[in-house]
Image (cartoon, rainbow, N blue to C red; front, side):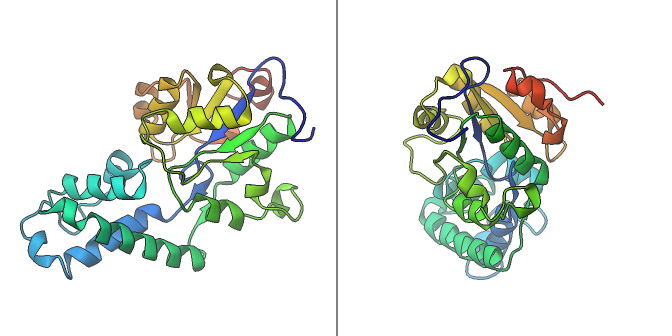
Amino acid sequence: MTREESSPATGFAGVIFDVDGVLVDSPHEVAWRESLAELMTGPWRHAAERSAWSPGAFTSRVYREVLSGKPRHAGALACLEYFEVPDAQRRVSEYAERKQAMLLRLIEEGRFDAYADGVRLVMAVRGAGIPVAAASSSKNAHRFLQAIRLGDYGGGDTTLLDVFDADLSGRDFAEGKPDPEIFLTAAAQLRVTAERCVVVEDAVSGVQAAKAGAMVALGVARAGDEHELAHAGADLVVTSLDDVDRDAFVDGRLARRAR
C-alpha cells in the first residue's frame, strides 16, 4: 500500500506516535539535569543557595512529572519554578539554551538508543496500510528519527523518519500537552477523524492530550508508571509495545498479546 492510497475503511485509521520515550530513549533527561547542575554549581550558585535544588534532587520522576512532553522554554520554566529558583522568568532562556547545546552534543556523540519495540510497531502498523504520524513537543525529534537506520528492521536503506506520513515534531502550537492541539493537527494532516486515531504515549500529559482530543490512548510504561498512565485515561498500558496484539490492532482493537 502506498501513501497515496486510503486508510482502512474499518478499524483504526491513523496512529500518532510520540517520539521521546516511545521510539527513542533520548538524552533529554540527562541534558536537562546536567545543564541545570552546571548552572547551579557555576554562574547561578548564589541563586542555588536560595532554591530547593540540590545535587540528586533532579530525579527521573521530576523529569517525567515536570518536564516531559513540554516545549523547551515551557519545560525550562516549569523546572525552575519546581526547584523555586529565584528570578525564574529571567533565567529561562539561559537554561533552555544550555540544555539544547548539551543535547546536540549528546546526539552527535550517539548517546541515545532506539526502542526496538517502538520501531517494530511503527513498521507493523505502516505495513498494514495504516497512516502514521510523529508528534513530539521536542524540536529535536526529527534528528533522532533521521538517525535511526531501518536495515535491522527490514526497512532497507531508509530511516525511521522516512516511514512517517506526517511529522509535526517541534512545531510551535498555542498550547502544549495536555492540550490536544498537536494530536488533532496530526489527525488532520493524516486526513482521518480524531475518533479513529490511536496515540502512543509514555507521558501522563500525552495520554491526557489524546483523551482530550477524543482519541484512543495506548500507554507504554517505560519507567514503572503503569498506574499513572492508566489513571490518566490510557485505554491500554503495556511495558513493551511488543505486548500489543498486532492482529487485534489492525482490526481496530487494543488488546494485550497472549503469551
